[in-house]
Image (cartoon, rainbow, N blue to C red):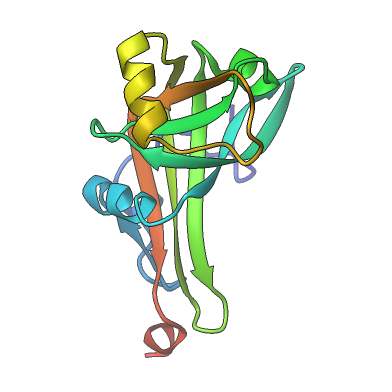
Length: 161
């Protein structure tokens, strides 16, 4: 596979000059710990998965668990459970302040699994996130934080300098 300029395509660019921005766009890469700290500051994100053989982006409430896994709570009968359990998915959350020109975006990629341990489920019901729409039969989905990446936008005034 080649890019438009006919140089060989690289799935993961070699060297930071290709992958990390140099500040020309006013953003910088966030490290894993900063990404997890940013994620912990919000409660709404999006799961990217496959539904009916098509890509889907599903807004969800979430929280980070003690192991930094992303926890979602949903109906046990939801399409989201069938689409994510046992599959590698992406999870994305962000926060932006358009007038200030600041914000961040974090993506977690990892295998999703339904929490089946009764004790763990009880602990999460007591302390975990809750779905937007209450359901009689709720389950938790954990997304393992195998890959964590993010970008932080600098203030508009910092970009101008």
